[in-house]
Image 1 (tube, rainbow, N blue to C red):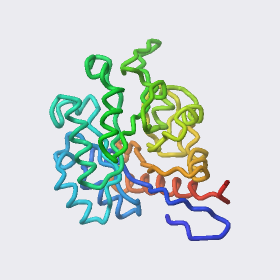
Image 2 (cartoon, rainbow, N blue to C red; image 1 turned 135 degrees about the vertical axis):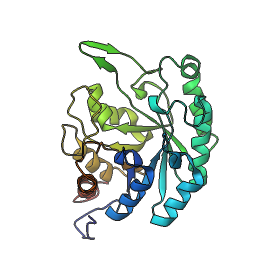
Image 3 (spheres, rainbow, N blue to C red; image 1 turned 30 degrees about the horizontal axis):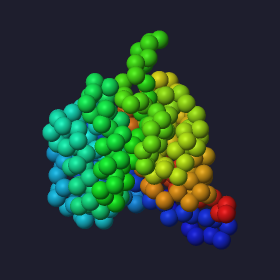
Image 4 (spheres, one colour; image 1 turned 90 degrees about the horizontal axis):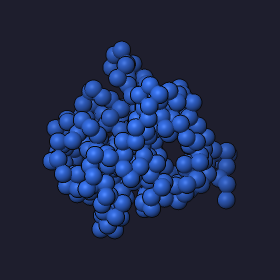
Length: 275
C-alpha cells in the first residue's frame, strides 16, 4: 500500500523495513523476496543460525537481486545465537558493525547483555559508547523486559532491561517488549527523547509473553506512536518485527506482512505537519 500525494497529507520520508526474523522459520532469502513483493522499503537482517544471514556477500547478492536495501543489522544477541560469529560478545558487535558498514546499513541493533555475561555486562555501557564513536553506524540499544514464571520475576539483563536507565547514544524501542515489561510506551519514548533512533514495530497484549503481534492486534499504541513519529521529524527507520510462526501457509504469512505494512503506511501519514 502506497498512499498518493495529497496537499492535506504529510507523508514523511521514514523508511519502513521488514525484519528477516518476521518470516521465521522461513529463511533470510524468503524475507527479501517478500519484502520486495509487498513494497517494503528495505530489510533489517537478523543475524542468526541461517548461514545466509551471516554471509555479507550472500546478503549483498540478495539485496541487489531484489532491489531491497539493507537498512539495519541486528547483532546476534539471542540465546539461540550464542555461537553465531564466535562466542565472544564484543567480536559479534565488531562483526555486526563491519557488516552494516559494508552493506550500507545505518544501524546496528543490540540487546543489553544477559546478567550471567558478567564481564561483558560490566563493560557494556562504556564499550558501546566507544564503538559508537568509531563509526557513523548507530548502535541502537533495544529495550528488553523482565523474565516471568508464574508469580516470579527474574532480571535477566544487565545493566538492566530498561535501557533508558543508561546514557546510550541511540535507542531502539520495541513495542512488543514494552507490552511484555508492562510499562507505558510513551513514557519510555519520552525518556529516550531525541536518542530514539530505531523502531521495532509489533504489538502485544501485556500477557507477559513476548508476542510480536501484527500491529493493531494487541493493546500497544502502535498507531499513535507512528503518528507521533510523523509529526516530530523522526529520522530513523520503522522495522516490522512480527511473529508469523503460526501462519497456516505461506499465503497467510504474506497476508499478515502485507497487513502490517499497510497499517504502518496508513498511520505514518498525518493530516498536517506540526511545526
